[in-house]
Image (cartoon, rainbow, N blue to C red; front, side):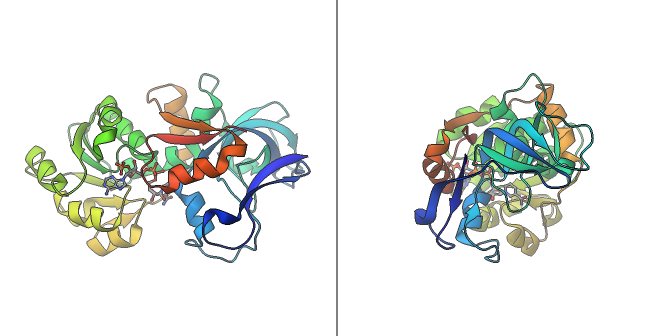
Length: 302
Ligand SMILES: NC(=O)c1ccc[n+]([C@@H]2O[C@H](COP(=O)([O-])OP(=O)(O)OC[C@H]3O[C@@H](n4cnc5c(N)ncnc54)[C@H](OP(=O)(O)O)[C@@H]3O)[C@@H](O)[C@H]2O)c1
């Protein structure tokens, strides 16, 4: 038998979250079964449970979208993968990553680089690709300025590091408790809150060449004017507000998974895992991310 974490009752709060058991899943055509070594916890996990992304999937809904692990079985029409391969990727539709075993579509995974841990690999498919997309959606040149709202979170600290690799001038807006993490990326720290826009303007009187938003809502509206023009705002957190301001939501590039896996595999950037929970602590892991104030990345390691 294999454990998996699901929400069982209805869309809404965490009360229906539950650790269940099922047989180890068999891979369908084009799929592999993976023994999960680590799974990334993301805001999308509680947003799905709350029904913010729709309520059409019947409960129980398995939780967890991104994993790294070891292939244990290979389905029909899968070339180039065998049992024992170490991989990372998004879970297949209807599957969850907070589990001992899950299914991945072979077309949606890449090999785990040898030199990184499973915990680091597990944060690549969602957080890593998002950071990559947001920092490449509008191409900047060396020396141009990148402001990141929510720079101390799972996506933000990666986006800051990517920006520094490209030698952008990076300013990270985050709460005071994340100053050390933000500064460790090579970004200039600006404290979130009422004074943030003025503090950024003091640093960038001409305005920012790109504003990456990982918070949304009023915090984004308050900071939006620091961008040189509204079209230079991109948001993963709140595409609607970004578009209303004249910017855009995240545009996912199918090449991002392999590109950011290479960057992290070569250890050009160093993801920070702040907390690792066991599968039987999935509720605590989700609650930490749902608080909205996670530092770096939260991982579940079954
Ligand atoms: N569209 C997509 O494909 C996609 C993919 C990945 C993520 N996302 C979204 O992107 C957002 C960020 O994801 P994540 O994984 O980085 O989340 P996270 O790890 O929870 O980080 C969010 C960060 O925002 C900070 N924050 C909250 N309120 C703030 C404020 N008013 N001012 C400045 N910082 C504030 C939090 O820390 P402090 O408040 O303590 O500073 C936290 O560090 C989420 O909304 C997520 O759903 C979208």
